[in-house]
Image (spheres, rainbow, N blue to C red):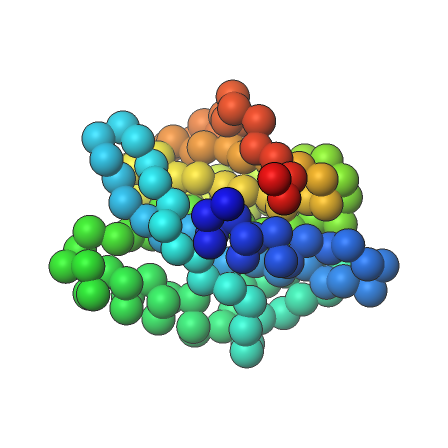
Length: 141
């Protein structure tokens, strides 16, 4: 299992008191393929509750900038991830509105919602959001 998948799984909201977590997806574009190699993780400045997360911490952008510089521009911002306190997550109205208004780029972007049993994946291109066809599982196999 990749380190990115392990890190995402570590934030699953498995307990009633668990708060939502979120961050950015970082990696490379290989032609039409998107490869996620790193993530930013929750930290100081983020606002977290049971059903909401707001990435306010400056460390998210710092992580993107650091990896961009270290890779001579090869590793870039690819999208966002966050958790939901449910087994089979679906984007909320707030999620969709945030993606449509906040992700203003011409390149395809990836959005992941990490649930307790499954990960919802979507790809945004311009003003269109499509569910990724391949099922993404949280299994520890």
